[in-house]
Structure formats: structure tokens, C-alpha cells
Length: 157
Ligand code: DLZ
Image 1 (cartoon, protein in one colour):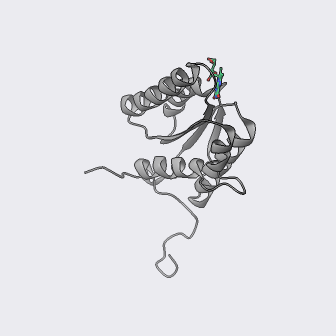
Image 2 (spheres, helix red, strand yellow):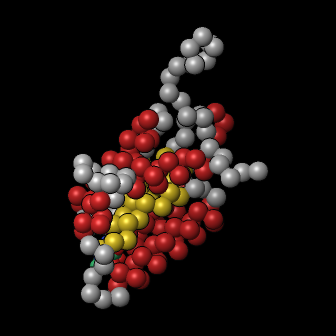
């Protein structure tokens, strides 16, 4: 905002005018894809002048509890994970549990949770969405953008 007297530092207005506190809660399965997702979310945050806290949890099933803990001292949370379908119903239990748990955290706490959980039939589908070189989509970035938009008041009357 040159000429207006406003600060030129990249400050994302948050609660009480301070920068938003963003947590990226990330599972630890499928390293290459996770690195892409975390990179996408981190880049989006950096563009908004935010340095996120990155919190690792063992797997996608643990994302809801990680998000709940992070919601206690952050304005927005991005949950990132990758689940690849195997030969048993396990995939469905992990995906359903993580998805329902993350929604519950968001509604119970009122803290927006960006949904960056990839649920894929194979690794290639995940790589295509990971925001890596050669990927066609960047789901980490999308999830971070959604969480920050909600934290800034999107959807509020
Ligand atoms: C056990 C498991 C399996 C088989 N696959 C995945 C996966 O593809 N992605 C993921 O994030 N986590 C996986 N996990 C781990 C579970 O999410 C969870 O961490 C364990 O069941 C321990 O609670």
C-alpha cells in the first residue's frame, strides 16, 4: 500500500490485527508426497507473511488429535496426510476416521481446519496432487488457502 502510510510489511490481519498463527499438522507416511503437500502449504503461508508451525503425527489416523491440540493455540490448522488404498478395508477406516475427526475438531473448536488428506488408489494419484514438479494439482496449497480464508472470516455473516 505505497503512499497510504500503511505498513508495507506482509502482515496478514488476524484476530486483534496480529498475524494469523497457522499450524500444519502432517502425517508421516509416504514421504515424497508429504514433502510436496507440506511444501505447498508452507509456500502459501509464506506468501501471506506467515511462518507456520509444523507438527508431525505418526499417521493420518492421528491427524484429528494433532489438529485438536494445535487448535488450542493457533488461529487455523492445515491437516495433511496421504492414504493409499491397499487390499483390505483398512483404507476406509483410516480415511473415514480422519475425515470425520477433522470435521469434528473444526466444529467443536471453531478453528478452521484445512482438509489436505489425499485418499488415493495408488501412489501416482497422490504424486499428481502433491504440488511437486510434474504434479497437476497442489492440494497442500489449496488446504492452506481454505484454512486461512476461513480464519479471516470467509462465510461469516
Ligand atoms: C497403518 C497405516 C497404513 C496401512 N497406511 C497408512 C497410509 O497409507 N497413510 C497414513 O497416513 N497412515 C497409514 N497407516 C497408519 C495409520 O494412519 C495409523 O498411524 C496407525 O494405524 C496407528 O494408529
